[in-house]
Image (cartoon, rainbow, N blue to C red):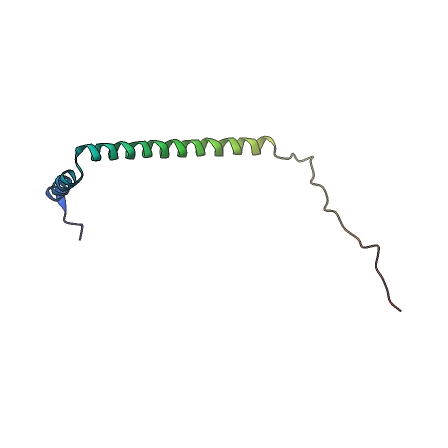
Length: 84
C-alpha cells in the first residue's frame, strides 16, 4: 500500500500537515524531536560508559588464583529427639 508513494505523494502529505497544524506548531514539534534524539544518544553513550566501568571494576576485583571461596556452612541439628 505504501510502496508507491514517491516524492509527489510525500510533498502532498507535507503540505496537508503544514496547512492543518501551522508552521509554528510543526517547528516546535521538530525541536522537541531533536531534543529527544539528543537525549537518547546521550543515554546510550552513558550506558556504554557505565558498562565499561563495570567491566573494569570486575577485572580489578576479580579473585586471584590464590583466593579460594569459603566453603559453604553445614548445619547440623543437635536437638534430635527419639521416642520410645
